[in-house]
Image (cartoon, rainbow, N blue to C red):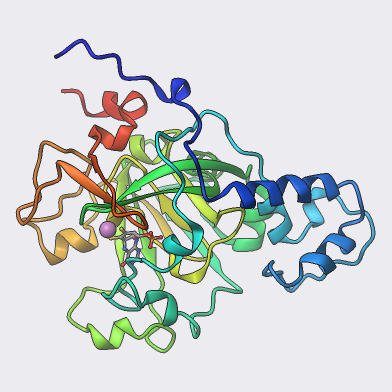
Length: 328
Ligand SMILES: Nc1nc2c(c(=O)[nH]1)N[C@H]1C(S)=C(S)[C@@H](COP(=O)(O)O)O[C@H]1N2
Ligand SMILES: [Mo]
């Protein structure tokens, strides 16, 4: 190993020049307004916030009663997670998506999501747990410790972005349901609604609904996030509303969107892309520049929006958090 000092996460400058300055300034502004009744805020920002059915009344309210949109906006940023690159422009990220339930065309997914109904929404947590439970998405947003994290995100197809997710560590939810000692894996499943997403019918050969899995060690790793927001507001449908997984050290296909079921098992669950092409996508799928995909190199990645190419980082730059999971 050459003795090059690679700065650790907390030593890297938070971000280089970013197109998101405007966004973060807006949030600071919103926080400052937080001392005012938020009816005022909501009426000022009604045009840019997607609000929940629960309407603001203008009276002082506790955190527990705030509309989900405002809670996401107020989630504190976790300073432990910094970037070595600018954040991706919000509109670029929102118009370049992998979400096969809608289309295999990354640039058209956002135009096909209108009929997808993400409210109301429930997530069933089941399997080898002491306290199986069906959670309403509003309950999750109200009761889970929401925070914002700036994460790199790397698709197996070699495109990459860097975005601010709002969510909560999956471990918090896992602790709530108390897995049995026999639970060794977590299996997650996406919705199956052919009338709300055209891809089910246009690509009937796929083994719908989309399914993914992690080991318990991976699922409870502090990096593993269940995201309910991005750029300070609710997830747009194309990003996997209302709740999706984010495992930043693995290729993007592990980060399953629009989750309806989380199941604890004692055997390694099958995964969607492994079922489709076992020679190309394995269960583990850790980002690794040294292991090429059978059809292309993984040595570099292309930053969406700018087209810049950067070297791929082992574990997508998160080795300090996760490399120990894979030793031996
Ligand atoms: N349900 C579901 N989840 C999914 C996918 C999908 O097709 N369906 N695609 C995956 C892939 S390949 C990637 S790269 C990311 C893309 O997330 P983004 O569109 O929010 O950037 O979602 C992942 N989660
Ligand atoms: Mo991907």
